[in-house]
Length: 366
Image 1 (cartoon, rainbow, N blue to C red):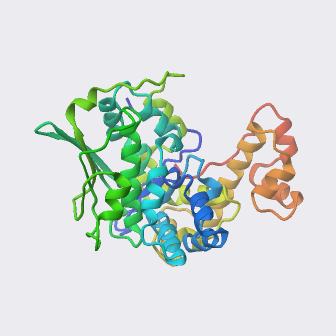
Image 2: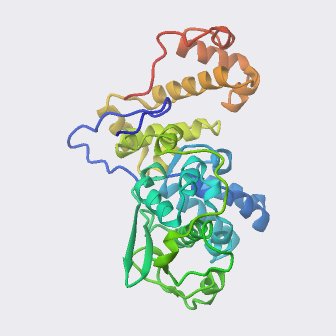
Image 3: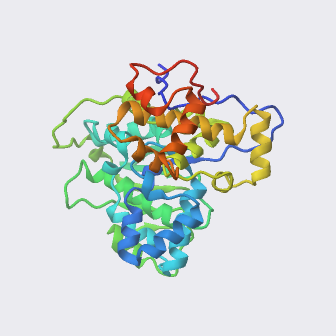
């Protein structure tokens, strides 16, 4: 059964034939949840600001939201932290602290499985709700299971930190079902072998192999049947994940990724076409040309997505109009009110007072 669409999941049209634009891979911003705070604690607020500037997105403001960012945005952020801090093993500092419990509804869905084997199966089948462009497999050979993650960010500057973090998340999943003293048989990393493997083996507490085809965690096959001792507070299905995360089909198209990038920026209060183009690893001119092929305009998309988010906040939160205006980056509530009236035909307070959304509220392209 096809997962249901969500109210914030545009399904963009396909690009015109011959557009020649490659759809950039994207990942849930939850992949960086908690990283900004750790960087601030270890290296100071200045390094976090510099990394945000390099990524052209304030990661910390949206890390607990169900939105997606390009892989290049993630690796640029990490590469800049390494450059500014001088720490070559940033990923190893972060890896032990990464947990699927920070990955929102997708992580909850994985951890709600009865056994480790079932959780890994869920990770494979539901990966599209965490990333578009990555891949995952679980294979068994002579009693050893290899859980492998193929990352679309491979080859980007800063990817070594992503690889170490990916291993940390896979270990987080396994340790949710296994005894505290469990150690993996082997970890494989798809990065060049460093001068010494000792820092990696110290962090992961097992042998580490480099130059692999993917990031993999190897464990004994009987462990797949291990059940968690945690109590289940509620039942979760893939449909719950679908409702909480953007529908994957939209992220298979260039316009869908553009819409998601704008949405992520709207949630930080600052939107620019330059930031969007950089996140998509293209130029402003190419981005504008690609949007025109789909009959879309960047400024109009921004206005539509801002208006839709404003409706959500007015209808579903107790935030004041002044607070909402500030969150969107408007200098005064009056400026926000004018923009909202232009997009919806009513003033913010009139919309909030109404029993339903006014007719004529346009949505981003589907």
